[in-house]
Image (cartoon, rainbow, N blue to C red):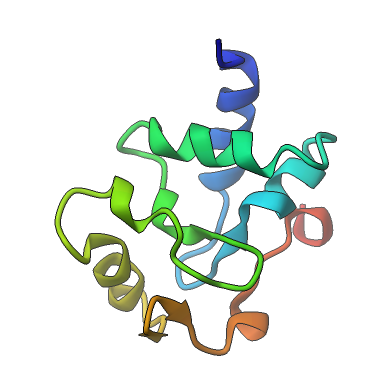
Length: 106
């Protein structure tokens, strides 16, 4: 069974990701003191409430690995592109420049 308290902490962090920026599952897990729990952060994103910008969370190299959990064929990519983020072949372009690390930013 998933830890709802952990999921809620994940949601709090994801809500802080600025418009036009992205972070990774692993960066969130590390920030929450649960390094190695990136997959659990992914599970949280899969069931996140509508007010959580889950589209801003990607894998460690900027791939849209969670895109199949969004309604619509390319909804995750469309949401990112609406924020000015360039995506090519499911990969965020200029990933390092757009990466928001909660460990450094919060």
